[in-house]
Image (tube, rainbow, N blue to C red; front, side, top):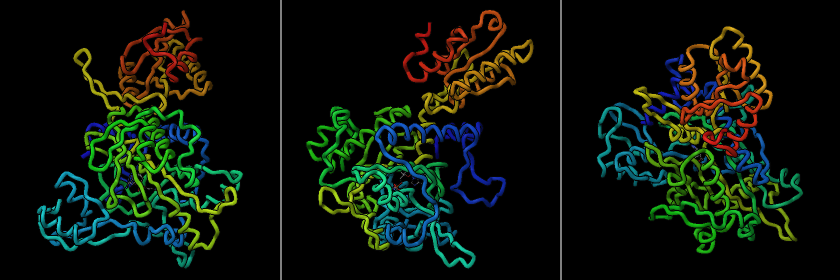
Length: 498
Ligand code: GAP
């Protein structure tokens, strides 16, 4: 079960909740994000966009979510994108065979294991049906997770909802390569929805049937995998790598490249960038690792995979797959579409290779929320707050009039509009006691709150409150914007405000 308190908070504050839950027969694995949840979700994407797309000089697209059958013949999904499922003979419930075994033995079970092997493990480990506790299963079968949609009035154009956002990136590659003046490496990114017919959606956002992905495919010349102009920026930076059969440890990018732990400098460089991005989501480095997958665990398209995982109360959760996909996808699409997707560099014609950074938006959301959750006792009273960084929190600042009367509401509203026009994300609330208003914004992670009181009318100062310490400072209204900007960009800490 997810850490209950995190999920309770999310539901209480409407950060996320089950989709269509007014209907008792709504299928599981679909989630809506409420007003503040949507903002946090957008900020998670925006931070990725700013740090891992724009700073890297990548381009971003918005591709269609429904694609023709041939795309998934070429990508291999129709044949290989399968989960092993097993049905209980007594109560007929269906479960993922690998997950049932993994839960019992508390270890990873590769989903790609042959079905007879999974049957054997079910027998050996005396696996029970989670619903009725019987130990009587049918043989394990492979179940394709693609969601089919029939297009057109006669439904004779079979199409599929994309199971990963990246397929349109491969399809658009040649066009964007030409627009990009025929230069490699070329990073193409996309954030959007993916769909998988998961047999047992569970743990709220962590295993859903519709979920967001933020993906980048970096197309490069395989002969130049060690040519990274920005190498100097990361060479001494340590990345937490967990090599096969070993414990995770921090190894500098330079050592990783020298010892050929990864296929080339390009791989080490982007793994470092991922770790740096997640530091910005406030995930402590010691809770992160890049786990090397062995051949049974890797996806069918990958030559090398490092799963980026974060430790939570639920154990290690995979947030991102870092896959070296070689020319698998471009070659596949070229074969089925009969289009030439090769490039010409210095007189040499070749199909570019791809290194992929494929992150789950909802998983990043869940883990950032879980690790930001704080509960503490102050003066005998318990409070909960989310220690989100300013770039993730739904608002930077809340503005409150102490009371609604005596012109305080109007003055506070003026201040709210001024801050709003300075492009800060601002929340205004005039209802209820000031204590309750603070508690509300603490629980959704707003780092600062400003209260406009009677003194503010005379001395043009306001109270600025810090979410984490609950300390308060009196600051001049005319200096507020600059102070907030410095706080949000970490150029000033709250205790240093004069
Ligand atoms: N394009 C490669 C790809 O899709 P993946 O490992 O299948 O690789 C990448 O998925 C990421 O998408 C995962 O690391 C995870 O964060 C997220 N993800 C995958 N399946 C998910 C699901 N059912 N629910 C929520 N997130 C999921």
